[in-house]
Image (cartoon, one colour):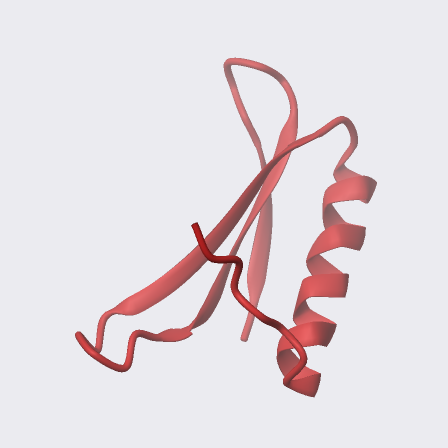
Length: 64
């Protein structure tokens, strides 16, 4: 799994997008997006932490 860090053109803040697998019911790709980081380094750090959780199998998707 990979992710990418991007800069929002309107706000100037950074965010990341990552594929977290496929939905078992529909088979469609699921993505997670997290916004509001002041620096690119902060976004990369949060992305690395989420990737680590996904690789270890400890990631639990928040419920609404």
